[in-house]
Amino acid sequence: MKKVVFFIILSAFFFGTMEVSLKIAGNDLNAFQTTFLRFFIGGLVLLPYGIVEMRRSHVRLKLKDWIYMLLLGIVCVPASMTLFQLGIMASNASTAAVIFSVNPMFTVIFAHFMTKDDRFTKGKIIAVVIGVIGIVFMIRPWDIQAGNTVKGAVFLLIAAVLFALYSVLGGNTIRKIGAFTQTSFSFILGSFVLLVILCLTGNPVLDGVVENYVIIIYMSLVFTGGGYLFYFLAM
Image (tube, rainbow, N blue to C red; front, side, top):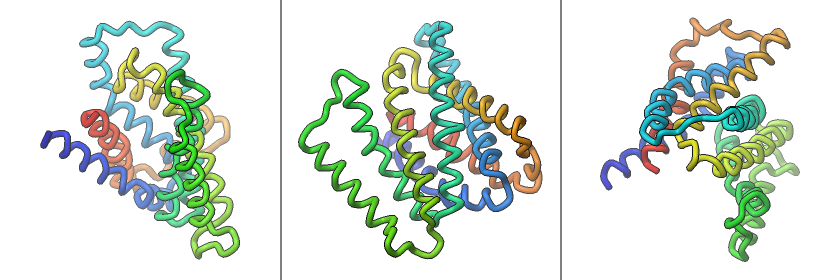
């Protein structure tokens, strides 16, 4: 039990530093570039655990599994997390953290339509309504706080919706494929898709990496790789 509590505290701490770290990184690095680097490196950090998990569970990935993990990666990395980074750069870090943290509210909605057992209940409906009201008062479109923008709030809300979709889609296969396996491969595959986008649009890939190696190591190894690692170890 002590080990589980330790893992939970570490993962919560690492994730808790995410928005501030990404805002710092975004001052010198492109939003697409930042997202690519942290999820590619983070995926590599989780990959050894995924390989061990596959061997222990005797999992053999088929073509449909790779396609499904590619879909997961696209929803998470180039879609949700890139919008998340853009939203952070157009908002205060604290606002970004609160808005994105409502993604479980959207998970409830997706789960109702995409799973067999996780249906709407009266309590869940009340929670969603309260969540929507909370988002409105957090954004305050009638009196936007200095440092926040409507554009940033929209990016963050869409990112939260897409991450909720990623969570539900991933939940449908995570027991079959494995948590470490599915997460590491989906991160890496999604990063490759984002790399293609970076190359096609002429955005930088490695420019500024040397100058910002400290924040890149922290955001990639600590709260992306390490955060998810301790999260799964706790589970």
